[in-house]
Image (cartoon, rainbow, N blue to C red; front, side):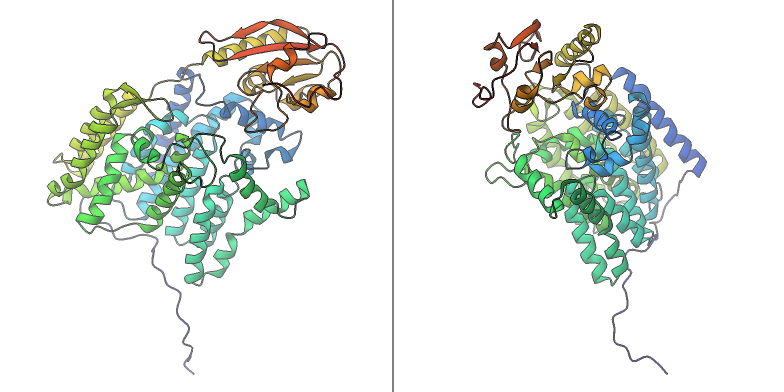
Length: 546
């Protein structure tokens, strides 16, 4: 008997592979693609020897946190440690910083591999465009081998979208679910995808989105005793960092996108948007929407007039999470160019873009914002990228020109990081401590780079080293060594119970200097070392003078 059910059938709006546009097709055999990926990873590792400074101290702190995991797994809980990130890296961390460098480089290179596969899944005829446009992006290269959560977040986001386009919705949901254990900014994407899955009546896949938030919550609840752990973490992050760093303005990431993604990838992404508007070309919503949501989310965090969410200081590295998506869409735009008629219509968008670069973006940057120092690189690379758009080339020739342009951008825009004066001082302090004969005494020290250069996390010291706080200073026995630095040891806006250096200087009967202050040549950073020689009166920490 025929069914009389009137239930709506499940809709399939994103097939695993779409019919590609007419024209030449060029894909790589799998062994060749894997070989190219490994070659890129090797190049990233090689570059690490030339760029031996630090983008931020977080990369050293993350390594130490991974090592500390083996003393107490709960230390990787929280927004800063990012448990989903650390769980994937705690094993190679046991082998030391060089092992992590190799693993990080592999993650960055294989994200390019997944960008290729994603482009292929949505019908690209030359998916190598996506690979090239990612692996040579300036900030991607700079951070490719460093200990940050952004590259692995980018890899997992790209993988989730790829699985979605391959109709593996349940696994895609599970992968996306895991990403929120790395970055809380993925929760809006989790919610949007969940609504879409429910609309498609894919309830099982929608439930998969809850797996890792629940795992994170239960783990945190067991560790802290807080039955509202996840809520406390999300709200607490916004509260803790509400005013910790300067907000750069809503337009910040629009201004810095050229620095982050590079002129070629950004120009081709703009061309993709122009193709959608001016030529009615297909829009890949499951790539563009996550990109736009994540980008706008971080832009909103930078609004100065009405503080919303955490103040992230305009950190550029947060945006490389969407770098593969920029590359995939830019690659799709590039391969459409040979059959796009008339290309001159693109000048309606690229003309104002070039004028904006000439007027506002022709300056050097300090890895956060633009400075007042002129820099020809943004202008030269943008003009080169725009010229690339109008070259009368077939797809394979255009791919070669694009790869060459990306290489030029990387050579001009990627400058190795050298160790800062502050890092040099901390390496000196670590060497002093190693040769001082003080190892084995109680130690109070805050600076990440001291522990990094010494080669141990706090938990590896015997007795375990502690942070410098009023409580720790008061409880420390005589003989304790205190290494006070002007960067991390006094940050009252971020943490309570902080102790200024004047507290120790004003109590010579209780704290003996171990060496003359070591100060950087510019006078902006210094380290003081003390030995506690007498017990601290119980009331002496009540009101330390700044």
